[in-house]
Length: 81
Image (cartoon, rainbow, N blue to C red; front, side):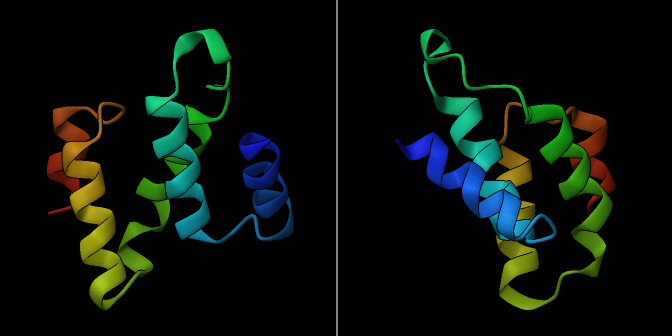
């Protein structure tokens, strides 16, 4: 299953911001019936805590993701600008 693969990836590289962003995106958009939403707060905090360490295109991509994400408050979205 897809969720098993992403969980395996997170377990192997827990500090990879790209993997955390992908998992958050999946958990935001998966139907509620699938019941795969348990890491949203954790991944959101990880992205906010490690955003400023990123550079170049990855930093821009993460900023764009946060700007359109349903998980982040308006204040949190403003904090990364």
